[in-house]
Image 1 (cartoon, rainbow, N blue to C red):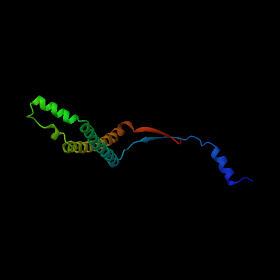
Image 2 (image 1 turned 30 degrees about the horizontal axis):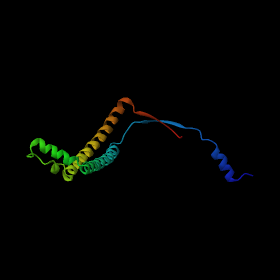
Image 3 (image 1 turned 90 degrees about the vertical axis):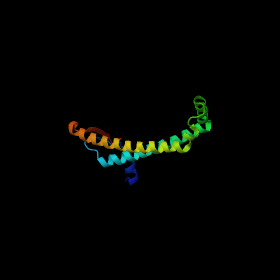
Image 4 (image 1 turned 180 degrees about the vertical axis):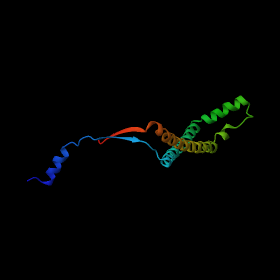
Length: 135
């Protein structure tokens, strides 16, 4: 007489047949697309701010900003704008936050527009045919 463990072992050794399914993507929910594109844009905005901060830290530590300021002062005779003040951490991070917010708004709008355009184009094309398998 066979035990339950032996039956399960024989069952697990058999390979399941591959099943293929073909589905059509005929609709993208607008609000789901907007929420997803917003979350992706938030990640992009955070990455932009962090990248600006690290770039400023590296350039300031190496002394590139001070060197550019001295070259700029030589060219203009020293009466022009102080680049050390203009390229300080405060103004650079303010610009990074503004760029991140613009990225956030633009990325969310592009995601919404892409969902609308896809939903409109499905009426002409019938949708996107996608195949799936259980492997």
